[in-house]
Length: 592
Image (cartoon, rainbow, N blue to C red; front, side, top):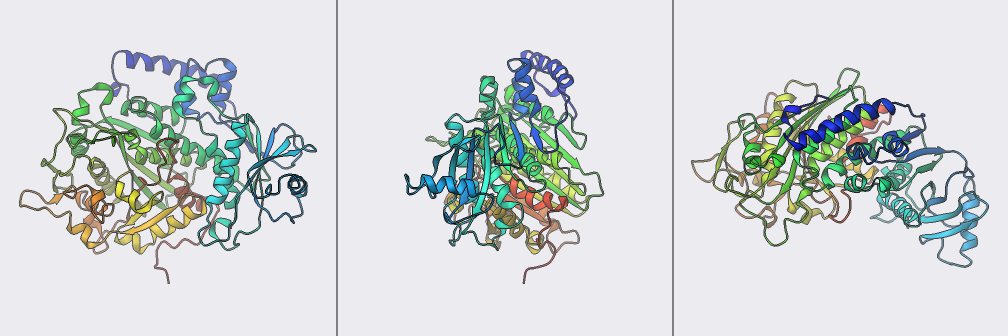
């Protein structure tokens, strides 16, 4: 990873980072130990605690993601666990390897008749853990049941274990008696992978808590998994580390994760990874004119000044596919001159979840190392501030693709910064093997109004022909990262037409996108046109597939850690097939 000291703030901020740099070297030398194949530990956090370095290195605590240990367990009587978290859908008549647990639950049901079907703590005196936290999934065979039943049962069970003071739970996935065998989420490793990811989700500790209170850096010592399938711990650990990066960046407050501090964080995350390269730079108004417009008011405040971050992962083999991700990273969104009123500014430090997810996906890539995949990332971390220098409605900006765009609403800044990122992704795609461009963004409230908690997917012509959104939706169904498919129609293109001879395009509808019936589709059409991607549609000599991913509905509640979407779905869709977990995704031909 390249370091860009010249682009860091001067004065006390820079001196502060010099201290970090020296300590990084010392701790890296001290902590260069290996892990066992079936045990995945965030050594840095654990060993720092042992060495008494937590108070010195809050930044390194955050980079390690403060994870405990993930352990494969082959015997239910294994010592060292203080509770069993049993996730299942039981009838009470099951037999086999879970006999002892089922018997304990049946015995307890004599006292508590609903024990099989309710979350409860059950005595288990013959087991070293002494107790079972029963975490039933509920019915799994109704029209609307999906993989989240498993994920949420495990999450709730482990969360309860933590609340009760247990630090070493053993996760056991039992019979799922009512689950349909042909459901995509019941195939192969996915029932167990859903349970593990749900459990790990309950164990995440926010970055600022880890830094302020080192003694609270981790909620657990170890998480055991009973009889894990091949590679499932490795996959789960990599996805959780990726989600941890995304959550740290997205969930932290706008000062802790201002643009330059995000760069410092990412430099630490990827400092020892030879397959991930990273470059960070200030927002050059010639090179990034649209990002510079949004950044104008913030530029005068050194700690708020924006950064453009590009990353690249190169597998060890010849790339068979190239994924190009663009990410909206608005570190705080005031709305700009179209300033947000009432209490709508609350929670806007999470307007960077799109770029955070791109960075998190690179962390997962760096751990799973798919050999035939190349991935490029283009992230704009800027702050949309008010002030004398803020960009305002009626300005006309000229995109790198030569399109004159009239600004309508400065609170629609996400599509503005993505215009630059998509232009560079498009230019790079023309030089790569089998490219596909994506944009990740918390872009529209309309998507949330439409889909509530589900990510919205929108394909251009070639991506739709290749069933990209369909395959991603299926991948999300497998791993509790749910998605819905929208279609970009001709009306979405038409409404972005310029309304006078002054401009080619309108940046937004004259009302809020939430007030327009197709408020989350029109920004996708705008992005295609403003970036020049419309010159690479299915009717062009060099078509490029593009999929817009609006994660505004699915990023999570402001009162909880961010969800880390859509890292899991993209891992299942694009990474696991390269690790031998094949699927029947159709990418080049239409469905019958």
